[in-house]
Image (cartoon, rainbow, N blue to C red):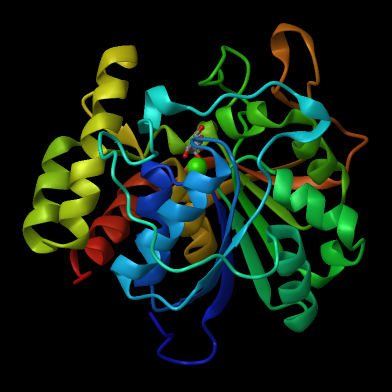
Length: 311
Ligand code: RIB
Ligand code: CA
């Protein structure tokens, strides 16, 4: 959606769509204060080719002119990885298995696109990273001035004062590429971490998705369809009657930062052993703004209101 005025926040979302990614991308498109200029794709919930296909399908459904630049297919250091199909479905969109290929990927890869856009819009570009941080770390390697050119990086990832989700110690995005995540936290990039400390408070329930489908038959209806598998996962593993809006919370931390309480601390990522992927406070690292409080009612209300208006 084109911004109503040119003070909208220019944003690139780095993503592994993924059910909650799809919701976050639709939200970013819907918010007038965000100018979504591109998606960069990464492995994680899905293989990267599936992430790119799903991203292009979503943008076409939304009527967005954002580009899709494909990124990393695997973690740094050949760290073992498998897509989280048990959470997001075999193709990343729940039980939907035939996702059409629409359009083509941008001619630059994710890291090249991120670096070029940060150079083109110095101090005016926000990257919202809602998958593993491989593309961000690659961009920092490709252009050391990327950290200075970017206004801010807002990530969905990590867990500071709470257990993990993919293991008892680690959150999935960080766990999927611990080395890349550690490089990002060491870089001095102006970073906000929106992790499990707050995102587990942002549950949408089946009735929310049904209401969304009724008010927005095409887009809300699609999000309702793909959420069924994701809801089923959380019911089965945690007996939850709802699913966390992890990625949408990161987008809302960009549009409404005052709804988040922050703790500023250096961070490092455990690289091995049973704690691999855990985000740990480290006073010797550059400070990161870690979200430890959230106005969950305000964030979920804004999410539902703007998604319901999509047609
Ligand atoms: O831990 C939650 C994160 O992992 C979300 O970004 C979800 O989409 C998955 O990528
Ligand atoms: Ca994600």
